[in-house]
Image 1 (cartoon, rainbow, N blue to C red):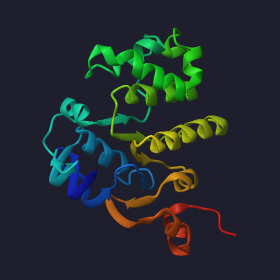
Image 2 (image 1 turned 180 degrees about the vertical axis):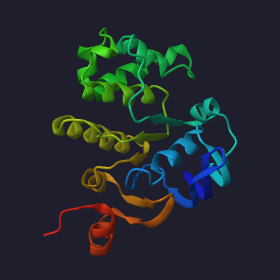
Image 3 (image 1 turned 135 degrees about the vertical axis):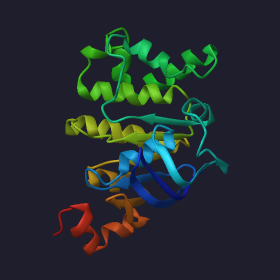
Image 4 (image 1 turned 120 degrees about the vertical axis):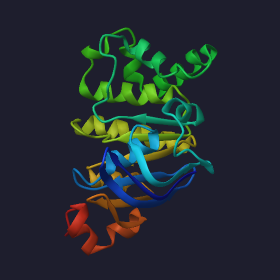
Length: 236
């Protein structure tokens, strides 16, 4: 579904990610893993259209979208849950969800909102509350829900578990597993390596803007050198 072909991206004269290539198949969870500053967020923001691609290509459903505007990428089926959530805090939960549906006919609003509220029942209980009154976990659910309102085929999530309590992290991971079962493809950026490896079929490890390892999550867990150098997992 998504193919990066020797993609380099950055800001102004600064190149942050160099010659990155990977493929994501339809219906899988693919995780980008690496330390702060590795280039994970820059990579996904370039896929979403917010960061300049300096060379190489980004293909989505076999179409070259390297130069396609952000709004067009949304209509093609790409949605992003940014780090920090970036909600409209003075708007209600219902209004925030509606903002995610701007690219679709209004007739789809109610149906899509019902699907989100089924996925996150806690949001239904808060439907008329301002987003600013929600807990951090509820805000993350709302951020994911808002992205889902656009009916994405590819959902990109930046730092799913950052700053969340363990019980809320469990709920969020249950949700993305359910989304995969519904056919949504997920590109996950996550510093919580343990949780990412539990749900991802495949991973790509970045260091200083370069791809240092790609493969299945199962293979990564069986590679002592990779674990020691990049994954930070506890070894018995």
